Image 1: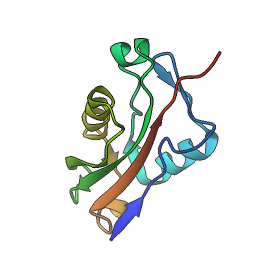
Image 2 (image 1 turned 90 degrees about the vertical axis):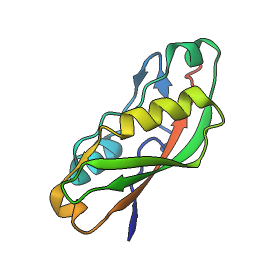
Image 3 (image 1 turned 45 degrees about the vertical axis):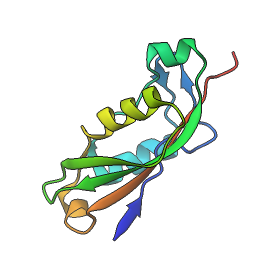
Image 4 (image 1 turned 90 degrees about the horizontal axis):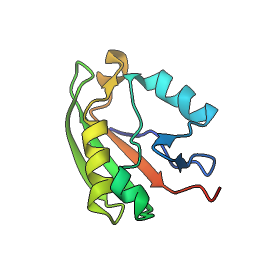
Length: 116
């Protein structure tokens, strides 16, 4: 079974500077399935060049909740953004009760600079 966990797909969720704004429903979903789930931030070079994009990543989850591999299902269109997602999603830890049932998790991501 493949679970889809919404990470940064919400229109309320935009990267602002090097920090991600976390919508309440996002935090609730992360807490429900994970024990550690940092969100990818903008790489400084990508932010300076105003790179934006939407992507999808597939996390392969071990039974202990750790991530064994992160694959790009759909690229954000920018190597730097993809690389930060792979790096950060590889650190995620899922709850063992969730990992026992689900071995793959799709994570959509949106990098969008705020217009403030």
